[in-house]
Image 1 (cartoon, rainbow, N blue to C red):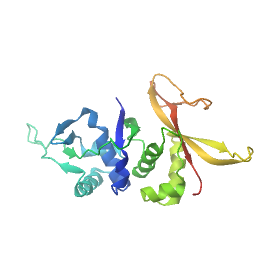
Image 2 (tube, rainbow, N blue to C red):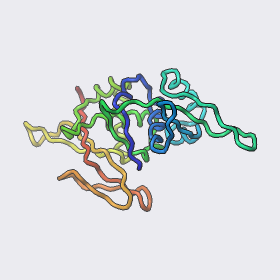
Image 3 (spheres, rainbow, N blue to C red):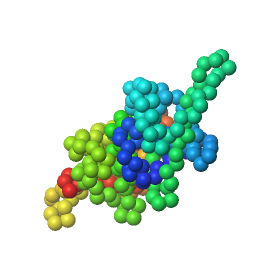
Length: 229
């Protein structure tokens, strides 16, 4: 199953874009990981992490993991040795953030498509969706303040996510004047194999081919972002 959960608390841990991208990727491996002393143990090459987190080299990954270790989120385990004497894959014990007080879901197939800064904004948009209101009212300034990124960068990255086909922008008309458009709405695009399904009523049907069998469809998630607070 490609969908995994992330705790809302990850945005309170003081993680920068690279740290949250690596931590989220390690969390995405939990369904196939083994448990050890209350932590989740994952074995993955640093080069693989770099490719999936939009980083240029394993050296950057190593430095990022060192910072996560200082924050008590990731611990290096002893690296295995192969029969030919070569060093094996890195293993990490990842501290699990509890999801009982709030979580959001992410499709792990998004990894490898985004830079760390794009991933940071994308994850925050996923987290901000209200299952009660079916909407989100975070302004650009609010997103900027909560993830520690400049407002101009947030505006630019949201545009990049739209261009990448990972979110769909829909304009909203003013209640006072139906001729005037105000806040933008954003629908998170989900992955589906072999078919397209649109759950939201009155939503424009959109699809984008990723491969011969994998396509994208707008999910029942609508995110609204004001241009100013």
